[in-house]
Image (cartoon, rainbow, N blue to C red; front, side, top):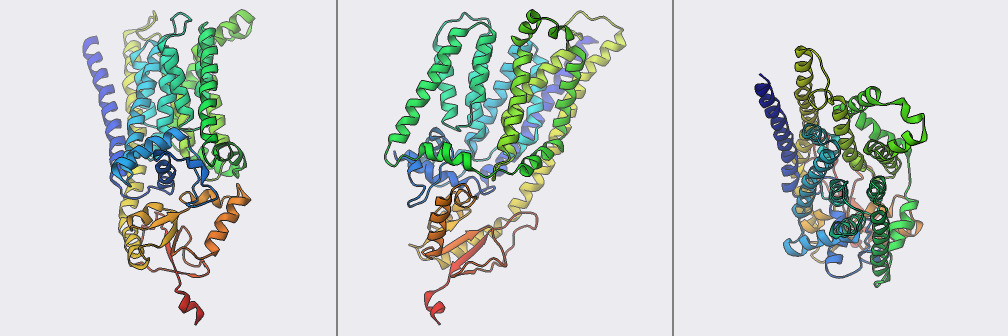
Length: 509
């Protein structure tokens, strides 16, 4: 009977893993083959990426042609730039990099959870939870640096947790951890918490020498790379990454919007329920009764994962208040949450077959049934998110004829040497034209009066043959007329609007 139950349970977990993976793959494939931006945040990466791949400084063109803003790390732009040089203007390379990174992130969660719990089922619960989250379904297959960055950072964490019992000596793994953390920073410069977690784990396990070498190594190597970028022709790296980022407008009502989105996701409540249940059932108040006990708790993985989760959630909330933020700001917290879920499950299931608990056969069978029940619940949570994403993807594909008409109109009405400005630069490139201001939002969101002035002067000069904006009917652009379209975007999908420069001879009349 036990053997039959074990096979059924094993089959259930594998089936849930396959189905969740298939659902995420469907979303990824839809995005991989979609020819245009899935928002207005992918094609803005192209120009700085191509500049990087050509050996130029992508941070040096903020106030001069072609007016490039580069808010992400130099290594990410290099990676994407390689794809652009090899395959031309396309999204699939960068989106594919994100999909591959998602797989690495899942592997890192499984590795860390298994190292902390010594429990395959607990690790599987953590993985299944991560695959069912709103953050994964929203962001898998999107041409952005978030998942590639986390793949690098959590690969470093996985290496550290995998050798908890190792001696405190510097070896190839330590150097690899330094390389991974430095690379993660130069994919996205806000990636600091994983380095703190790595150092904390080294200290927790008595490896102070490795902690010091990693901190100094990442700091020194990062400083050398940052200085090299800043000292390259045009500079601009520190100004764009640190000065301007502090000036980005914040609005905490926007941060609350993303919190509400998380609270609408079933996986959020499943995680909260498991973690709270584990804390209530297993927390020992004696930890707070004496310093030796408290010190022992400080060295525990529960303390580290709990502290990291709280810090990641706070950081995500604060940064998601920035204008232009999205649900992706909670990806790091989701990965840490998956590890916390695995540890919570291990705590709750510790007297099933892992401990020495005794009870009736009926009780034991009920406890065994809880594992497939949670797995099925996570499958339903993932299916719920997939249904929402599938609907959104259908709106995007049904709007494709509209975007193709915008491209066709642009190619027909704008001279071959005509310059354009577009919230979707890929539409201009698809029409065989050139563009300025690839990341237009950073010139208009109020973070810099200098950038606003540069953008305003360029637009008012009427040097651009066409402007594609998010504005619609009723929006006036002096010297430009709204080009009518026969097609229409889906009513629940946002459209863009093409404005063509009015012929000067018509204006004179």
